[in-house]
Image 1 (spheres, one colour):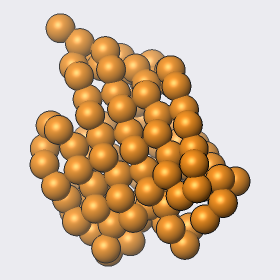
Image 2 (image 1 turned 60 degrees about the horizontal axis):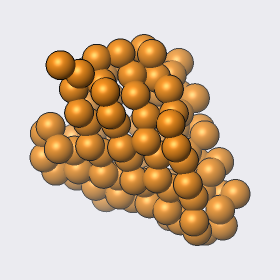
Image 3 (image 1 turned 90 degrees about the vertical axis):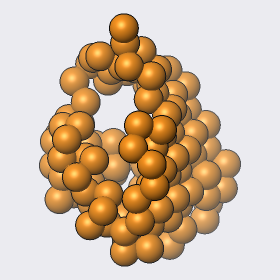
Length: 108
């Protein structure tokens, strides 16, 4: 995928997340998508991934601190209320997130 195509999927994903629209967030995943997070492990498929987003809500206080895209890969660091550091890597293919890794450091 091109950088522009990858960015379009990521932008859709972030807009839906910030709006708290979980159904729209889940449009970006498939039954084969893999989601790995340091606070919970490995989740495969949209059905298994959905509860994470239901629990996290619209990410109040979200601030993107860095963002880089190359081909089908996107990397972002961020902070949010109660989170001193967040880091996501997303791999996008055919308009869907096929792999997402997340590191969250909770504020103390």
